[in-house]
Amino acid sequence: MKKSLTLILSLAFFAFGAEWASIYHSLIAFDKRPEIADGNRPGYVKPLATNLGTVLNSNWISSARVPQVLTIEAGLPLMIVGIGNDDKEYAGGAPTIFGGKDYEWGTTSGEIACTAAPNCHVVNGNETLNKLGVFTYPYLQLAGSFYHARIALRGMLLPAISELQSFNLFGFGLQYSVGHLFLHNLPKALHPFDVSLAFGMNFAGIGYQPEDYRGTLELDFTTMHFMVVLGYKPLKFFEVMLSLGYETSTMESSGHLISEDPDSYGAEIFPTLSVDGKNGFRMGLSISFSLGASYHPVLGVDFGTKTSYTTNVLYFKQSFGEDAPIKDKAKKSSTETVEEPTEDSVEETAEE
Image (cartoon, rainbow, N blue to C red; front, top):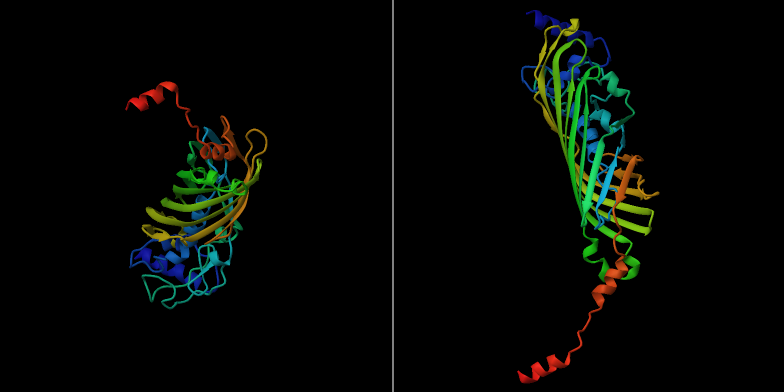
C-alpha cells in the first residue's frame, strides 16, 4: 500500500506542469511488465541504440588498398555524432530520453507505445542527456594485414566512475582488398583505384547505477557494419575513400533496481527491454594521409541513419617492405619467356 501511495504522489507531482523526467520514469521505460504504468517504451530509449551504434560502426577502414607485405596499425579512433531533433522526438513529437520538458503531463493516445494504456502518460526527457550536444567514445584499435587480408581488433575497459559502474567493449573487423586481382589488366590510368570488402562487429556493455538506487541497469549493445570501399590514391601520401554499406545496432537491457528516492521509495524496476537502433544504409566519404614513416590520420563524414564525423587523428601504420608497383605486375603478366629448343631436344623429337 505504501509503495502504491508513493507512486501515485509521484505521478501527481507531474500533473502540475512540464517537468524533466524523474530518474524513475527514465528507467521505467526499460521495464516491460504490463502492470507497470508508463513502462515498456522502446521509442523513448531507441536513440541510445542508434547513437552508440553509429559510433561503434565507424573507423574500421584506414585505406581501400590492403598491401601484400606485412603491415601493423594502432590508434585511438574517434567518431563524433551530433544529437539532433530526430534524437529528441518520436511518435509524432513525444520526447525521447534525449528530449525536452515541453510536454504537459497527461494521458496519451496509442501513438505513444506503452503496455499500460490507457494509464500511459507523456514522459519528458532526461535533463542530463538533453544537454548533450554530441555523442562520442574513443577506443583502442589494433590491426594487422598480410597478403591483402586485414584483421582489426578494438576494445576498451573502464572502471566504475560515479554513476557509470562499468563500460566494456570488444570488436573485430575483417577486410580484403580485391584490386590486386584485376588492376594489372586495366589501363594505367586506373591503377590508383582499389576496391575492398569489409565487415565490422562490436559487443559493448554499460552498467549504470543512478543516485538513490540500489542495483544496476545493464545495457548490452551488438552492432554490425557491412561495406564496400572504393579508394583512389593519386599520390603516395593521399587517398580518397568512398564506402557504401549497411549497419545494424541492438540494445538489450537487464538488471534490477530498487529506489531509495523519497518520491518513489521502494519501487522496483526490472529492465528487460530489447530495442533495435535505426538500422539502414550508410555512405561515408573520407580522406586518409600517409605522413612520414608511420603517421596515418583519417578524416571524413558519414551519411545514413545519422550524420557523423571521423576525426581519427591518432592513428599509425607501419609496413615492413613495399609492394611491387602495379605496372611491374602488368608487364610480368603480359610477357612470356619461350625456351629455345636445344640440339638434344630436336634429336629426341625426331626419334619419336
